[in-house]
Length: 111
Image (cartoon, rainbow, N blue to C red):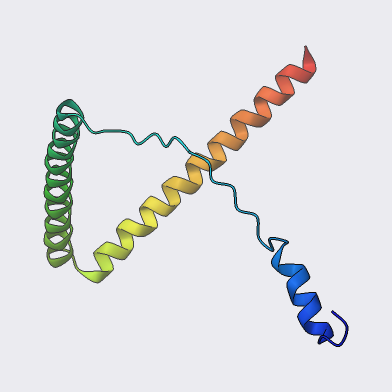
């Protein structure tokens, strides 16, 4: 050993020591299986969704057609009058609720 390269001595020392220690182990993995009943349930669900979505499209189409028909039969000033009436009705309703709330508060304080 005298006269050997010191790096060769270190290399021979490390050849006996494993640098990486790997242990293997079995792992059980549970993978759910799809049964024919599961597939039929999902097909039924999707069929129901198709029917439901078709009904939604039909309803929206009818509503849009009604709105377009309404828009073409009303003049701008008539539409503005309707908006003003509805806005005033909403304000009146809110005022009525406020009055009723105040009356309820007053009656509860008086008791």
